[in-house]
Amino acid sequence: MGGTFDPVHHGHLVAASEVADSFQLDEVVFVPTGRPWQKSDYLVSDPEDRYLMTVIATAADERFTVSRVDLDRAGPTYTVDTLRDLHAAYDEQTDFFFITGADALGAILTWHQHDEVLKLAHLIGVTRPGHRLADPGLPDGSVTFVEVPALAISSTDCRVRVGRGSSIEYLVPHGVVEFIAKRGLYRNLS
Ligand code: ATP
Ligand code: MG
Image (cartoon, rainbow, N blue to C red):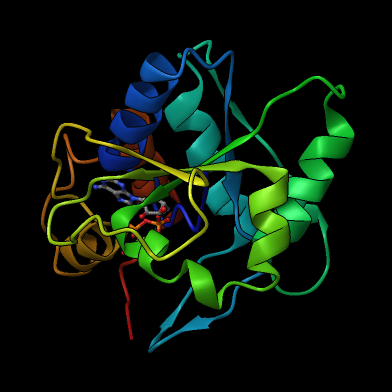
C-alpha cells in the first residue's frame, strides 16, 4: 500500500486490515513515497517524519511492515519502481497486491508504465467516502474491488485540523498524535 502518509490515519489502517483479512495476506507493506514535492500549495513533510509516523502507526500489528524503498530511491516515486524493488526483496513465489483507494484508482491510467504495474501486482481498489469506486477501464481481471468500512478521514483534513489547533485524536493512532505535537508538524501550513 503506497501513500504519502502525511500523516498516516485510521482510514489507511482499516483499509489495509480489511484487505489483509479478505485476501488472507501474510503481510501488508506500507510504502511512504519519496522526497518532498509540491502537492498543489502544500509542501509534503520530511520523508523521515512520514516514515516514522507510519512505523509508529503499524508497530503493534504483526501483519504490517513499512518499507523504505521509495525513500531510499532518488527522484520522483513511480509505482512501477516500488513494485520492482519489492519483487527484488521477496522470493519469486510471492504474490503481490497493490492496495489503492477509490480516488487513486481513478488516476491509474495516468500512472507511469501502468501496463507494467499490472504485470507486477494485482490491483485492489478499496472504497473511500466521497469517491466512487469505478472500474478505471483496465484489462479484465486486473482489479478487484473491496468494500471497507467507511472512514471519512483524510490526511489533508488532519493537517488542516492541526493547523487550526483542533484535535486529531481518534482520527490517527495516539502515538502519531504525540509525534505530530513533538515535531510541531502542520502548525504553520501555508
Ligand atoms: P491526502 O489528503 O494528503 O491526499 P490521503 O488521506 O488521501 O492524504 P494518501 O497518503 O494520499 O492519504 O493515501 C494513500 C492511499 O490510501 C491511497 O490509495 C488512498 O486512496 C488510500 N486512502 C486514504 N484514505 C483512505 C480512506 N479514508 N479510506 C480508504 N482508503 C484511503
Ligand atoms: Mg490522497
